[in-house]
Structures are given as structure tokens and as C-alpha cells.
Image 1: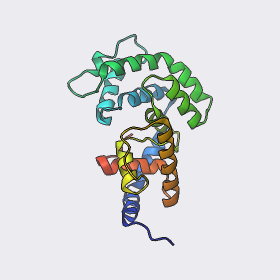
Image 2: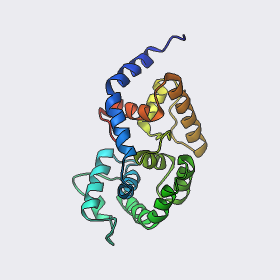
Image 3: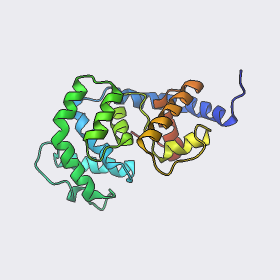
Image 4: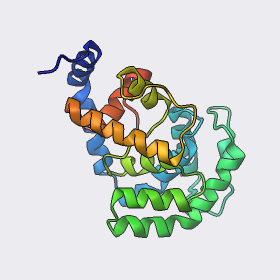
Length: 210
């Protein structure tokens, strides 16, 4: 058997310690109710260049104001002292557009469209959704094997030798190429891509967040 890099042994040890919590989190994603999909979409539109904690706090405020059913402009709700949403004006426009398009999104989800096909449609049709955001949303509602290539994941893929460098920007082509490498690495070490994603996140932040 090929000698494993010591860093991979470290990864195995950390996974053994956290796999229970990680699998519980993935199970929660798989059980999410349909009526929660809208706010998961909103959350993922808010996360780019803002912290996951701030995005989650913003979603709480939007829920409290019944954004999904009321005709309100979310811009002022995203500009609050208790959290920071970068580019809140632009993201407010994204949220309004996504709200208008959500019936079409829900219909595609109910049609059980394959994850990669649905991700491509989201990326092409929903303002503010790139590969990462679309993957994030679908993972959070139970889809699997879609890479969420944020800085935490890229840094660890570089650390474990999957990447020769950390790209400054990702094109469609490079995103899909790195996702393929991530899947191959996950298969080689016997830990699923989705579990590795949450494990890498916990290594960077100390938490198993969504």
C-alpha cells in the first residue's frame, strides 16, 4: 500500500473525531422541508464576501419581516449594525429577483432534476448565483457531490496537494476541473466530498456550519 502523506493521516484522525457531527449536519440538509428552500436560497445569495454568521443573522431578520410573502424592499434589512452584508444594495436586488423567480426554481426541484443540470440552470438564470453559490444552495437542500469552492476549500485542496496553487479567480472551466480533482481526491482517501467540505470548513473556522 502506498505510504500516505502525514497530513492525510492527520485528516483521517480529525475526520474520525468529527464525522458524527458532520454526518448529522448532512442528514439535516437531507431532511429540510420544502418550505425552507426559499430562505436557503436567500442565505446562499448573501454569503459571497460576507461571513456565514452575518448571512445567517440577515436571514433571521428577513424571516421576521416575512420577506417571502410581503412586498418589501430588503435593502434596509440588510444594512444593520448587528451584522455586515457586503454589497447589500446589490444583494437586495438579487433577493428581489430570486423571490420573483422562486416558483420556477421550486418547480425544477420538484421535478427531481439531476443536481449538476439544476446547478447549471441556476447559474445561468439566477442573478448573483455562480457555480459556488448554486452548489451551496443545492448542498443545503440535500444534493450531494457538488463542490463549494470557497477560499477555505481551495486553501485545503492546495495544502493536501490536490492543487499546485490557489487560483485568484475561477472560470467555469477551472471550477469544474477543480471539482473533478476534489472528487477524485475524496475517492482516493475514502471520505466523501460533502464530508470533506464540512471537515475543511471546521478546520478553518472551528465550526461545522452550513
